[in-house]
Length: 349
Image (cartoon, rainbow, N blue to C red; front, side):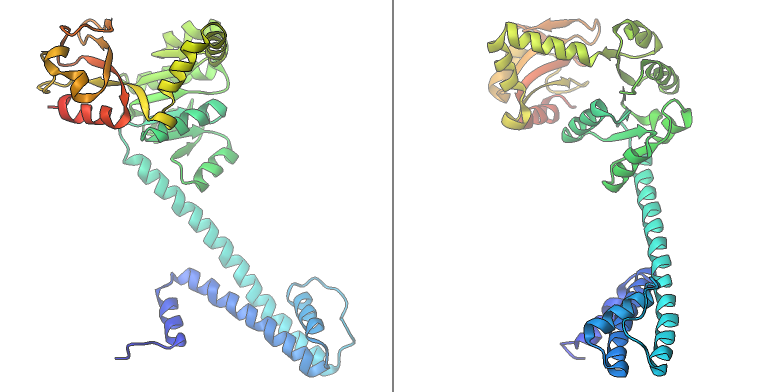
């Protein structure tokens, strides 16, 4: 057996490994290029034209543009053009049809891959509405390592998401089947960022009925609709315009405080964040006080609040004697990797 293969043998081996449909298009494209070379050489040899004139005549013949002949043709030249046109147009049509089929199949395969990944998800987040707010929310959640499925009815938006292989479902979020396709029964949270409040209200009602344990966050445009969204099942309702106004007032009234919070919470720069960590049953931290756990020295993080599992009340800036029970939620300020280590080492059984 030869250690080295000739270029021809390598080409044959490469073609053999290629998908049949792609191999067809490749070979047809190669035949088309060869036909351009043959056509150019034919006109040069038969009519005595220049290579540029021969290539141009070959192009207008194969593309069926229909311009007049470059120069008058002899009888031999006309027969040659006839054969070139019949052969080339057939190959060109085959390449165009097969390429279109390949693109269509590729799109369908991509959609199937996306749907398969969605079917395998659990504890994910569903974002309804991929406008400016929905896009930013999706980006932030993905950066935090969360699985996100976008639901939007706009064809251009979903085509862009499909191209990037982002998990999405194209359809009306008010339709139960669309939410079911997005995995609403297995989702952890639903974020409603649809363009009008009435749609957000209807989707909140539908989603709450399909998954009573779902956390629903809704955006509202009109402050007066806040109560309607809460009655529809939203756990939290936010008006982005009010949040923006509050932040601007904070900057004006308390610039140094705002600067401090911005530095603390700017995770991309300092990898520091405020996060919540739940203490599970039989975890090493359960039943201990903050002093007994030696929390600050052990983890170099600060517990700024404890939410009681039974009463849902929060103790802000807890004292060292504050006891941590199973089910409590700790609000912690610290580095991202330290918070992750905290979850794994002392908050899980």
